[in-house]
Image 1 (cartoon, rainbow, N blue to C red):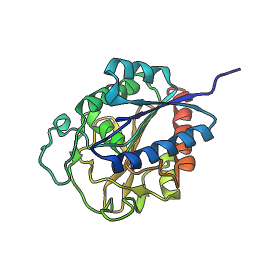
Image 2: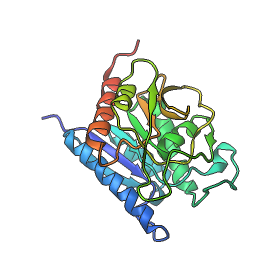
Image 3: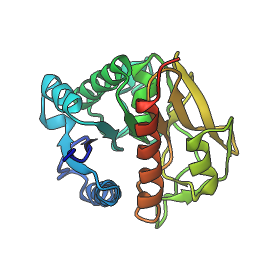
Length: 238
């Protein structure tokens, strides 16, 4: 009997005593991702990038059939030549960033499925040589529910674009891709031009800026994105 595929869910850390409300929000998103993976009939593992070394994280990623890089703190601006003084700047996790970027680059080299969400989407771009907008408005709410529903447009005939157009696209982010990294192509933009989804030109690697793992959408959207990556990984090379 063939074992079920395994998805490794990579988040930043398991606890944030300095930010308990943020931890609860992230835990809710992680739990919804687990439900989406389970609904596919896949197995899941969760690892905190801040709590393991880069070698262990890379080996665990290589042992999985797919990797999901989840959200969290802003990417360390040193990694893309940005300023440390910007609106909304908070705690950074440089060790977790560097370890996760190694996983991303390794997945691209090996042609292994990887889905990068929100901060993960930004890390994907930085890992491959791109830069970030350090602050923008309109893609999060500072009052009540932090998620805002975003209107988008898709480019080309991609499964990722179809997921976005089926909606809803639920966002809560104040940073985004500025200079697109070599090897990435834009699949979805918000109505104001912000890049909401990218894909690697040669590897089964996708980044989405919005939150498909929101509890309202996780089973449908995360499930569809992981299935899409699995199909890409099995496709013959031209």
